Length: 267
Figure 1 (tube, rainbow, N blue to C red):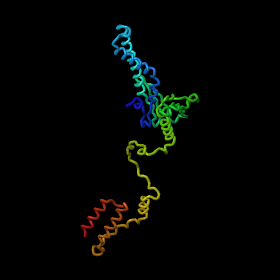
Figure 2 (spheres, helix red, strand yellow):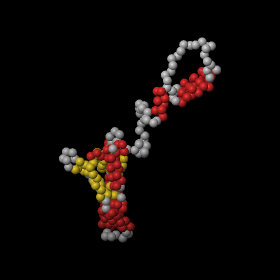
Figure 3 (spheres, rainbow, N blue to C red):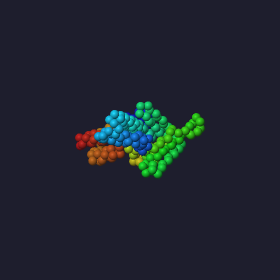
């Protein structure tokens, strides 16, 4: 897990992640790269030359010096690449975060609600290779002036970074625009037990509730009449009425099966 990801608050998620374009690494280590190439060529020349350039002693000292200089240049280039790999320029659901450093970490962040403006500048070369400088400004409440969390020089894909930041800022200000979690490509939220809501107008549940309300109350059970005075029941009609009650949800399927078994046993 990255350093910045460990500092996220509860429920905070990373929306977009970027860092400097690799051109920034080349720009900052250009002369070190040139020096490494020159020293490498000198080392190969001194090692492959059978005849001494000056004399054996001086040639040996030059070879050792060239090797040490080459290692120094390669170490400086490798350190810069390592530092570049540790850059974390993030947009989360709540903040914009800038984290840098290999051993000593420097981290700055700003809430999306406090961001007032974002200025993007791209040269024609930057537009070709998709990098630019993004300066994000926030309102400093203490002084009433504008303060920035720091610019993002030579950031890779600056347009996508800015769009993701503005979209997330708008979602915070207008949560009704947020798409469902499945549409966002994230894991579905855990299901919680919810109380049943009243039926919406025009739904099937409204019709069922209305039928239940309009249905006449069951007549009181009369005293048991003599068996000779009772009219014989039609099992088919009784089962049909029970099926209708089951379809309307007034009785369960288990109750329907139990009544059906009693009627069939009786006849």
